[in-house]
View 1 (cartoon, helix red, strand yellow):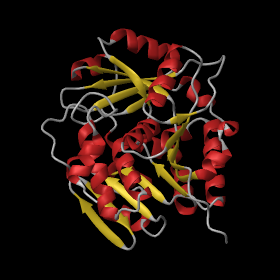
View 2 (cartoon, one colour; view 1 turned 120 degrees about the horizontal axis):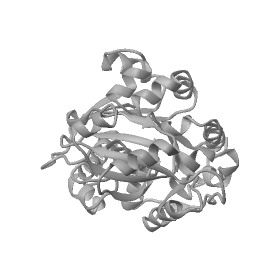
View 3 (cartoon, one colour; view 1 turned 60 degrees about the horizontal axis):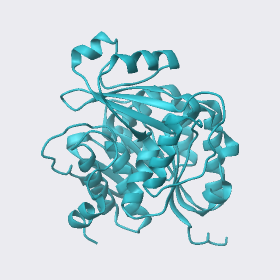
View 4 (cartoon, helix red, strand yellow; view 1 turned 45 degrees about the vertical axis):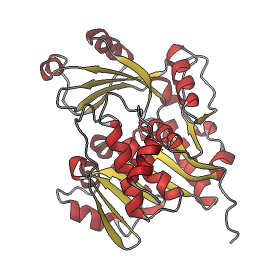
Length: 334
């Protein structure tokens, strides 16, 4: 078999193209809105408008889990691209400008009609936990025709967002990307995104992990949900033979990386104060994948992810405010 050509893109991500609206709330406000703390709930346009009107001042910026990851990776100096659907509206313009300004290639044409650009209302409580209500809007219109096969063939790793598995068209787009990547001899990475997402799509995710995924990202709740166990060791025992690498984050307990017949326990990086955990897993994946595409050891990949995640949780929002490339170079020289 002829080896694949050198990649033209290091990390290509498929995900929901969402504009985040971040605001601080207290627990009583969440209760008054009928929301379950710490969860991600899908809402329709009317619900999104009602919640938006009920919130105080906030910060609006482009977001979405996989988009956060490739922005972080771009800031760490690698070549990135993103596939996701927006509407040709004000929020769509915000998303497109922000992600391109961050150095990410984004060529998916904006829809001229249909649903508005997706919005995620991120409510952060004083303990830094976030509760999200997401109106998927135009992002659900992503389909197989939006997948640039040449781009997938040129990407060292194609990174898939579990949240995107909900809409059928986007699911088929992800399946096409997987098929093209595997045919080209490229790696496929998947983040499980959310335990409720795992509950909705367990059979499909198990099939993906069993047959197509090279690098799996999950937190402890997601991986134990996938294998319907309360024991992390049991879940790791189940997933280890199926993927090249599994990177499991454990909040303040750091991360566990399994791969190459080894287990690496990576401590969390110290943070003076945790302000907002939004995007911690996304930036961990960014740091990890930058290390992986750069040929670093799995332990160094985990440490790079931990440094990037620590920067994100030290402020509001899921986009880095500090020079994370300098932070990583100082903490994980190589």
